[in-house]
Image (cartoon, rainbow, N blue to C red; front, side, top):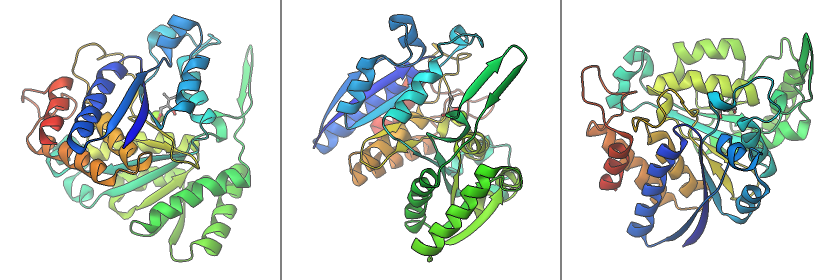
Length: 352
Ligand code: IPM
Ligand code: MG
């Protein structure tokens, strides 16, 4: 097949990890006989430096014209001045929102070879296979923001439709898995959560009676993720809770550098990015873990291009690279010689 993919490398380790993601995309194209046209665009801090805005109109136009977007990471100390009006993250929010990508899928599994990389006990990690579906273009991230000299506010608002569309997506995904849905909210405190819970209840009762639904408060959920993570199948939650819980869940996998994500809307076009940030502390050293980005490429193949066989091949290639012990510093055992970003990418291509 033919597909056009926009690559937004961004800042920090972004360019290093997307280079390995595109290496794998090119290898998939060769092996399976596809034609992928890769185009580079500007987003984040680098876009501010070059154009004065974190998301130039050209980037948005290219995103709309592409079948999928692969993104590295945005942000860094250079643009971190809290009083600045223009910030790299605005570019990220703008592209997620402009493409209507309300469902952010963040799968978490534990590779047997990496059990020791997690501080959680092995018996607790056994059987962990969960998927967080994070609402991505609403809630407190997008509500009205106000700031005065010594006072500030952020509004967290959701409409019923905004809740329904993301919960529906989570339900569809749960149907293809173990049929269990955990909806996470703070309904004992927040009105937006009380709406979320009521809408979710109604929707599941009417349209997905075959699913097992539970409601869990976000504070309790953060504890259960550490105590009994294997009990979760699909977790659906609002934007900021999903952001926080997935950083926590990455500890199960062993590193932030292992967790991919897919951001989807109603159509096939999606945005694919590792859940980690730009990691300015290790940027430019060639030691970042590219597996989260490469696994995001697998999700791109699956969800935007419908190439399930190719997606599974990439996932299994990453798994075999890990089996072989090709591990970057974030997950390599103490004393072992860690792989570089490029070596890890190459190991995946070889396994393919
Ligand atoms: C994520 C990130 C972003 C978010 C940051 C970089 C703004 O943490 O994708 O999880 O909060 O959405
Ligand atoms: Mg985050």
